Length: 140
Image (cartoon, rainbow, N blue to C red; front, side):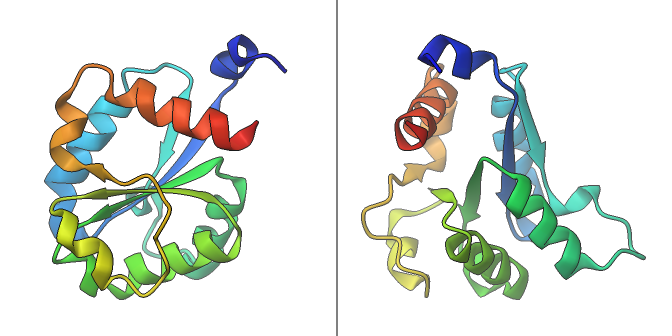
């Protein structure tokens, strides 16, 4: 499949974040929404009566890659840790988006060697293209 064909393919992204970071997550989703072929799943799409662990595992399995918004709050979140652990266990392509770069060393899952984005970087016009380029290189 050529790179041109990949850009036309629908890409499923699992975005993990702490509920306290909802506004920051909305910024990320807004940036991602600029690409018509991207579908972003967040826990907001789940209903209260659902088996959350089962749905998260299902959505992570179906996702092409995993974005995790890391903030002082999210590194303390058991759900963000759970989702990150499942993504790591499924060998998903993981891109951490950090509110502060020093947070990377506070995560129990080994993130060394991953391309880490600063939240401020997402304000650049080409940020989503860079994320997609990273994913496409990893998928090749």
